[in-house]
Amino acid sequence: MVFLKLGTIAFGGPAAHIAMMEDEFVRKRQWITRADFLDRLGAANLIPGPSSTEMAIFIGHSKRGWAGLFVAGCCFIIPAAVLVGVIAAVYVRFGSLPQVAGVLYAIKPVVIAIILQALWSLARSAIKTKILAFIGVISIVLNAIGIAPLIVLAIAGIVSVAPLWLKRRVHRTLSAIPLSGQFALLSGATAAVAIVPVSLLRLFLSFFKIGSVVFGSGYVLLAFLREEFVNHLHWITERQLIDAVAVGQFTPGPVFTTATFIGYLIAGVPGAVVATLGIFLPGFLLVAVSGPLIPKIRRSATAGAILDGVVVGSLALMAVVAWQLGRAAIIDWLAALIFVASAVALLRFRLNSAWLIGGAALIGLMVKVN
Image (cartoon, rainbow, N blue to C red; front, top):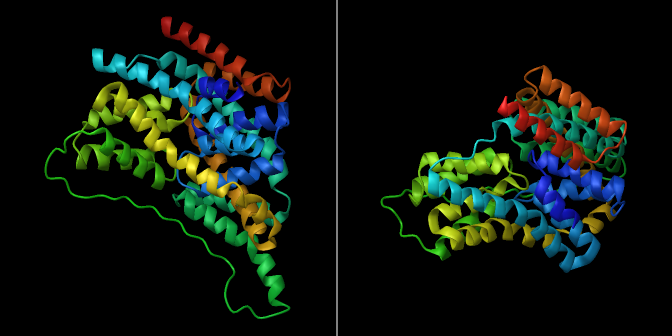
């Protein structure tokens, strides 16, 4: 039920989703320790797919094994997918998106406050040494100047383990650096010469491929979707793609439900179902494989040090996202007032974030009417 609720109210993208999960499962219910939460956050950032959805799957798997993995992931995904499917049906009928500017205007400052609350809580556990604090600062700077998130995380892991390597070199000469990491980002782009006939199998395989290789934000996803469905298959137009990504951004739950919208445009309800399964299935498989490895990683001094650095790097990336979103969201005195009130309610009074989002949505509706 908790993941079903999060899938229904979790606006704001992966950083906000992760913040809400920390609030629900670490602070309120204490189903998972903050250290375990941070380890899984680091792992989710190192594998392809939607990081917040993979966090949900990680938590479910850690609590109830395979059944928990399936239930947590599905409950987080399905509410957003159903909502996106309904919006897609309206879009197909009327040719435009519902107008939600007022609601979004008021919800965004609340999302920023939720992210900051989680950052404050998680950083106090993650930043255990001065070197980790340094890594956090460097990660923020590198990401702010345009370095790709995966490269930032790799650098964070290397810098974190470097003191351990240097300490060991005092005792013996290392013949090779004991670190192996592989990051693959395969575009699979090919030139299109004609419109490819629509088939549900091809639709599934296209989204499965994208879900297996995409790291990063919805903007990275946009590039893959454009190459596959606009340039290569010619199944949708540029305008439809932009509208699909917009729907994924303003609906709750994972941004990857953009696939549901595109699937509906291409093949109706069966297309929406097939596309949703295709893009999210790799996340379930990757978490199932990597989840049991996390305790083993922690037992290794070298791998544990790398994971510490990756965790701090992940929090740094969240901080950059919060800053970027904040600049876009807090645009006038009313938005600033909503942000301050939300921050106080969260940090001082520990108010449930769902109430804040609901209240902000009502304010947004009134702003729109006026």
